[in-house]
Amino acid sequence: MALSSDSPTDRESSEKITIQNVSRSYESTHALADVSFSVAEGEFCCVVGPSGCGKTTLLRAIAGLDDPDGGSILVGGDPVTGPGLDRGMVFQEYALFPWRTVRGNIRFGLDRPACDCPDCEARVRELIDLVGLDGFEDAYPKELSGGMKQRVGIARALAPDPDILLMDEPFGSVDARTRDRLHAELLDIWTQTGQTVVFVTHDIDEAVTLADRVIVMDADPGTVQSTFSIDLERPRERTSRDFVDHVARIRDELGSPADTSH
Ligand code: ADP
Image 1 (tube, rainbow, N blue to C red):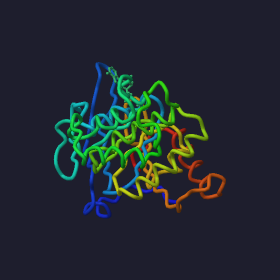
Image 2: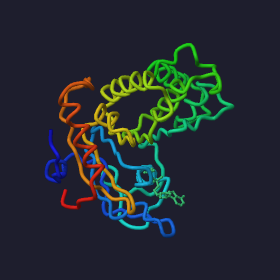
Image 3: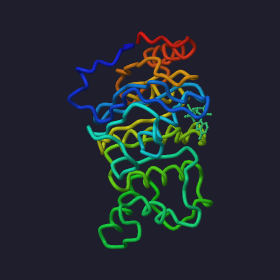
Image 4: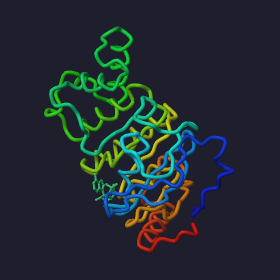
Protein backbone atom coordinates (compact mmCIF):
# COMPACT_ATOMS: atom_id res chain seq x y z
CA MET A 1 0.00 0.00 0.00
CA ALA A 2 1.47 3.34 -0.90
CA LEU A 3 0.63 6.91 -0.22
CA SER A 4 2.54 8.24 -3.16
CA SER A 5 3.31 11.63 -4.42
CA ASP A 6 2.93 11.40 -8.18
CA SER A 7 6.29 10.79 -9.71
CA PRO A 8 6.36 12.73 -12.97
CA THR A 9 9.30 10.68 -14.22
CA ASP A 10 7.28 7.47 -13.85
CA ARG A 11 4.39 8.80 -15.87
CA GLU A 12 5.86 11.27 -18.30
CA SER A 13 6.17 8.81 -21.16
CA SER A 14 2.55 7.63 -20.98
CA GLU A 15 0.65 10.67 -19.72
CA LYS A 16 -2.79 10.79 -21.29
CA ILE A 17 -4.34 13.60 -19.27
CA THR A 18 -2.28 16.41 -17.79
CA ILE A 19 -3.98 18.86 -15.46
CA GLN A 20 -1.77 21.83 -14.70
CA ASN A 21 -2.61 24.47 -12.08
CA VAL A 22 -6.29 24.47 -12.98
CA SER A 23 -8.52 26.97 -11.20
CA ARG A 24 -12.23 27.67 -11.53
CA SER A 25 -14.31 30.09 -9.49
CA TYR A 26 -18.01 30.84 -9.40
CA GLU A 27 -18.35 34.29 -7.86
CA SER A 28 -16.90 33.81 -4.35
CA THR A 29 -16.69 29.98 -4.59
CA HIS A 30 -13.27 28.55 -5.45
CA ALA A 31 -14.48 25.30 -7.00
CA LEU A 32 -10.93 24.43 -8.11
CA ALA A 33 -7.74 26.11 -6.91
CA ASP A 34 -4.42 25.27 -8.51
CA VAL A 35 -5.27 21.62 -9.21
CA SER A 36 -2.49 19.60 -10.83
CA PHE A 37 -2.17 15.88 -11.50
CA SER A 38 -1.81 13.57 -14.44
CA VAL A 39 -3.44 10.33 -15.54
CA ALA A 40 -1.42 7.71 -17.39
CA GLU A 41 -2.65 6.10 -20.58
CA GLY A 42 -4.84 3.12 -19.72
CA GLU A 43 -5.00 4.04 -16.05
CA PHE A 44 -8.17 3.73 -13.98
CA CYS A 45 -8.13 6.83 -11.80
CA CYS A 46 -10.78 7.59 -9.18
CA VAL A 47 -11.32 11.05 -7.74
CA VAL A 48 -12.89 11.14 -4.26
CA GLY A 49 -13.71 13.97 -1.92
CA PRO A 50 -16.52 15.63 -0.02
CA SER A 51 -19.47 17.21 -1.75
CA GLY A 52 -18.52 20.55 -3.26
CA CYS A 53 -14.76 19.86 -3.60
CA GLY A 54 -14.92 20.38 -7.35
CA LYS A 55 -15.05 16.78 -8.66
CA THR A 56 -17.76 17.46 -11.23
CA THR A 57 -16.22 20.79 -12.20
CA LEU A 58 -12.92 19.02 -12.85
CA LEU A 59 -14.52 16.24 -14.90
CA ARG A 60 -16.50 18.74 -16.97
CA ALA A 61 -13.32 20.69 -17.62
CA ILE A 62 -11.54 17.54 -18.88
CA ALA A 63 -14.59 16.83 -21.05
CA GLY A 64 -14.36 20.33 -22.49
CA LEU A 65 -17.82 21.22 -21.16
CA ASP A 66 -16.47 23.89 -18.84
CA ASP A 67 -13.68 26.39 -19.31
CA PRO A 68 -11.34 26.84 -16.31
CA ASP A 69 -10.30 30.38 -15.34
CA GLY A 70 -6.66 29.43 -15.12
CA GLY A 71 -4.21 26.63 -15.84
CA SER A 72 -4.41 24.10 -18.63
CA ILE A 73 -5.67 20.61 -19.41
CA LEU A 74 -3.87 18.54 -22.01
CA VAL A 75 -5.20 15.34 -23.53
CA GLY A 76 -2.58 13.36 -25.37
CA GLY A 77 -0.41 16.47 -25.22
CA ASP A 78 -3.01 18.76 -26.86
CA PRO A 79 -4.90 21.47 -24.96
CA VAL A 80 -8.61 20.81 -24.39
CA THR A 81 -10.58 23.48 -26.20
CA GLY A 82 -14.04 21.85 -26.17
CA PRO A 83 -15.81 18.49 -26.20
CA GLY A 84 -14.44 15.80 -28.49
CA LEU A 85 -15.16 12.22 -29.56
CA ASP A 86 -11.91 11.17 -27.88
CA ARG A 87 -13.64 11.68 -24.49
CA GLY A 88 -16.87 9.91 -23.55
CA MET A 89 -18.82 11.12 -20.54
CA VAL A 90 -21.20 9.14 -18.31
CA PHE A 91 -23.46 11.21 -16.06
CA GLN A 92 -24.89 10.37 -12.65
CA GLU A 93 -28.48 10.94 -13.68
CA TYR A 94 -28.09 8.97 -16.94
CA ALA A 95 -29.01 11.96 -19.17
CA LEU A 96 -30.79 9.69 -21.65
CA PHE A 97 -33.24 10.98 -24.24
CA PRO A 98 -36.66 9.75 -23.01
CA TRP A 99 -38.11 9.76 -26.53
CA ARG A 100 -35.36 7.53 -27.91
CA THR A 101 -35.13 3.77 -27.51
CA VAL A 102 -32.05 2.01 -26.13
CA ARG A 103 -30.82 1.63 -29.71
CA GLY A 104 -31.57 5.30 -30.45
CA ASN A 105 -29.80 6.56 -27.34
CA ILE A 106 -26.70 4.48 -28.04
CA ARG A 107 -26.73 5.48 -31.68
CA PHE A 108 -26.71 9.11 -30.56
CA GLY A 109 -23.19 8.60 -29.21
CA LEU A 110 -21.87 7.74 -32.65
CA ASP A 111 -20.00 10.18 -34.81
CA ARG A 112 -22.92 10.06 -37.27
CA PRO A 113 -26.05 9.49 -35.12
CA ALA A 114 -28.46 9.63 -38.04
CA CYS A 115 -26.59 7.07 -40.11
CA ASP A 116 -28.12 3.61 -40.44
CA CYS A 117 -25.41 2.10 -42.62
CA PRO A 118 -24.47 -1.53 -41.84
CA ASP A 119 -21.28 -0.45 -40.04
CA CYS A 120 -23.14 1.89 -37.67
CA GLU A 121 -25.85 -0.72 -37.11
CA ALA A 122 -23.17 -3.30 -36.33
CA ARG A 123 -21.46 -0.93 -33.88
CA VAL A 124 -24.74 -0.31 -32.02
CA ARG A 125 -25.36 -4.07 -31.91
CA GLU A 126 -21.86 -4.65 -30.57
CA LEU A 127 -22.38 -2.05 -27.83
CA ILE A 128 -25.76 -3.51 -26.84
CA ASP A 129 -24.06 -6.90 -26.44
CA LEU A 130 -21.11 -5.39 -24.58
CA VAL A 131 -23.29 -3.83 -21.88
CA GLY A 132 -25.68 -6.81 -21.68
CA LEU A 133 -28.84 -5.17 -23.03
CA ASP A 134 -29.65 -7.82 -25.58
CA GLY A 135 -33.46 -8.02 -25.92
CA PHE A 136 -34.00 -4.42 -24.75
CA GLU A 137 -32.98 -2.66 -27.98
CA ASP A 138 -36.44 -1.18 -28.52
CA ALA A 139 -37.24 -0.31 -24.91
CA TYR A 140 -37.55 3.32 -23.81
CA PRO A 141 -35.68 4.66 -20.74
CA LYS A 142 -38.86 4.74 -18.62
CA GLU A 143 -39.13 0.97 -19.12
CA LEU A 144 -35.63 0.32 -17.74
CA SER A 145 -34.22 -0.08 -14.23
CA GLY A 146 -31.56 2.37 -12.98
CA GLY A 147 -28.80 -0.14 -13.67
CA MET A 148 -30.04 -0.72 -17.22
CA LYS A 149 -30.27 3.02 -17.86
CA GLN A 150 -26.68 3.42 -16.79
CA ARG A 151 -25.67 0.55 -19.10
CA VAL A 152 -27.21 2.60 -21.91
CA GLY A 153 -25.28 5.67 -20.70
CA ILE A 154 -22.04 3.70 -20.73
CA ALA A 155 -22.73 2.23 -24.19
CA ARG A 156 -23.50 5.69 -25.55
CA ALA A 157 -20.25 7.07 -24.11
CA LEU A 158 -18.32 4.12 -25.60
CA ALA A 159 -19.98 4.41 -29.02
CA PRO A 160 -17.31 6.50 -30.76
CA ASP A 161 -14.61 4.33 -29.19
CA PRO A 162 -13.12 7.18 -27.11
CA ASP A 163 -9.63 6.99 -25.66
CA ILE A 164 -10.92 8.39 -22.38
CA LEU A 165 -13.99 7.57 -20.33
CA LEU A 166 -15.11 10.26 -17.84
CA MET A 167 -17.61 9.01 -15.27
CA ASP A 168 -19.40 11.29 -12.80
CA GLU A 169 -20.73 9.20 -9.91
CA PRO A 170 -22.33 6.88 -12.47
CA PHE A 171 -23.57 4.30 -9.98
CA GLY A 172 -24.73 6.68 -7.26
CA SER A 173 -28.40 5.98 -7.96
CA VAL A 174 -28.40 2.19 -8.24
CA ASP A 175 -28.81 -0.40 -5.49
CA ALA A 176 -25.77 -2.09 -3.94
CA ARG A 177 -26.13 -5.44 -5.75
CA THR A 178 -26.54 -3.80 -9.12
CA ARG A 179 -23.58 -1.56 -8.37
CA ASP A 180 -21.38 -4.60 -7.66
CA ARG A 181 -22.41 -6.12 -10.98
CA LEU A 182 -21.79 -2.87 -12.83
CA HIS A 183 -18.33 -2.58 -11.23
CA ALA A 184 -17.41 -6.01 -12.55
CA GLU A 185 -18.82 -5.22 -16.00
CA LEU A 186 -17.04 -1.88 -16.14
CA LEU A 187 -13.72 -3.49 -15.22
CA ASP A 188 -14.29 -6.10 -17.95
CA ILE A 189 -14.95 -3.34 -20.49
CA TRP A 190 -11.91 -1.39 -19.32
CA THR A 191 -9.74 -4.52 -19.63
CA GLN A 192 -11.05 -5.11 -23.16
CA THR A 193 -10.74 -1.52 -24.38
CA GLY A 194 -7.65 -0.30 -22.49
CA GLN A 195 -9.27 3.11 -22.11
CA THR A 196 -8.08 5.74 -19.67
CA VAL A 197 -10.79 6.21 -17.05
CA VAL A 198 -11.42 9.12 -14.67
CA PHE A 199 -14.19 8.08 -12.29
CA VAL A 200 -15.64 10.49 -9.74
CA THR A 201 -17.20 9.11 -6.59
CA HIS A 202 -17.71 10.04 -2.96
CA ASP A 203 -17.69 6.34 -2.04
CA ILE A 204 -14.24 5.20 -0.85
CA ASP A 205 -15.12 1.48 -1.14
CA GLU A 206 -16.09 2.03 -4.75
CA ALA A 207 -12.83 3.87 -5.45
CA VAL A 208 -10.71 1.11 -3.88
CA THR A 209 -12.71 -1.56 -5.75
CA LEU A 210 -12.00 0.04 -9.10
CA ALA A 211 -8.94 2.26 -9.16
CA ASP A 212 -5.27 1.96 -9.94
CA ARG A 213 -4.92 5.29 -8.20
CA VAL A 214 -7.17 7.41 -6.01
CA ILE A 215 -6.92 11.19 -6.02
CA VAL A 216 -8.28 12.66 -2.78
CA MET A 217 -9.64 16.18 -3.02
CA ASP A 218 -10.43 18.72 -0.35
CA ALA A 219 -13.10 21.42 -0.49
CA ASP A 220 -13.22 25.18 -0.16
CA PRO A 221 -11.13 25.69 -2.14
CA GLY A 222 -11.12 22.52 -4.28
CA THR A 223 -7.59 21.16 -4.19
CA VAL A 224 -5.80 17.84 -4.54
CA GLN A 225 -5.03 16.70 -1.03
CA SER A 226 -3.16 13.46 -1.73
CA THR A 227 -2.81 10.49 -4.04
CA PHE A 228 -2.99 6.78 -3.22
CA SER A 229 -1.81 3.93 -5.41
CA ILE A 230 -4.01 0.85 -5.07
CA ASP A 231 -1.72 -2.06 -5.80
CA LEU A 232 -4.24 -4.87 -5.24
CA GLU A 233 -5.05 -7.60 -7.75
CA ARG A 234 -8.51 -7.56 -9.31
CA PRO A 235 -11.16 -8.68 -8.63
CA ARG A 236 -10.74 -7.19 -5.17
CA GLU A 237 -12.14 -8.78 -2.06
CA ARG A 238 -13.74 -6.10 0.08
CA THR A 239 -13.31 -8.04 3.27
CA SER A 240 -9.59 -8.64 2.73
CA ARG A 241 -7.21 -7.00 5.14
CA ASP A 242 -5.41 -5.06 2.39
CA PHE A 243 -8.67 -3.70 1.01
CA VAL A 244 -9.88 -2.62 4.43
CA ASP A 245 -6.48 -1.00 5.13
CA HIS A 246 -6.62 1.02 1.91
CA VAL A 247 -10.13 2.20 2.69
CA ALA A 248 -9.09 3.18 6.23
CA ARG A 249 -6.06 5.14 5.00
CA ILE A 250 -8.15 7.10 2.53
CA ARG A 251 -10.90 7.66 5.08
CA ASP A 252 -8.31 9.02 7.54
CA GLU A 253 -6.96 11.29 4.86
CA LEU A 254 -10.41 12.63 4.03
CA GLY A 255 -10.96 13.35 7.67
CA SER A 256 -7.75 15.32 7.99
CA PRO A 257 -7.07 18.85 6.79
CA ALA A 258 -5.37 19.45 3.46
CA ASP A 259 -1.64 18.82 3.49
CA THR A 260 0.05 20.28 0.48
CA SER A 261 3.25 18.34 1.10
CA HIS A 262 1.79 15.17 -0.53
P1 ADP B 1 -18.55 18.13 -6.34
O1 ADP B 1 -18.77 17.46 -7.65
O2 ADP B 1 -17.27 17.72 -5.68
O3 ADP B 1 -19.71 17.99 -5.40
P2 ADP B 1 -18.83 20.58 -7.84
O4 ADP B 1 -17.77 20.58 -8.87
O5 ADP B 1 -20.21 20.20 -8.29
O6 ADP B 1 -18.37 19.71 -6.60
O7 ADP B 1 -18.93 22.03 -7.20
C1 ADP B 1 -17.81 22.68 -6.60
C2 ADP B 1 -18.28 24.00 -6.02
O8 ADP B 1 -18.63 24.87 -7.07
C3 ADP B 1 -19.51 23.88 -5.14
O9 ADP B 1 -19.40 24.81 -4.08
C4 ADP B 1 -20.65 24.24 -6.06
O10 ADP B 1 -21.72 24.80 -5.35
C5 ADP B 1 -19.97 25.28 -6.96
N1 ADP B 1 -20.56 25.29 -8.30
C6 ADP B 1 -20.49 24.30 -9.21
N2 ADP B 1 -21.10 24.65 -10.35
C7 ADP B 1 -21.59 25.90 -10.15
C8 ADP B 1 -22.31 26.83 -10.96
N3 ADP B 1 -22.68 26.52 -12.21
N4 ADP B 1 -22.62 28.03 -10.43
C9 ADP B 1 -22.24 28.37 -9.18
N5 ADP B 1 -21.54 27.54 -8.37
C10 ADP B 1 -21.22 26.32 -8.83
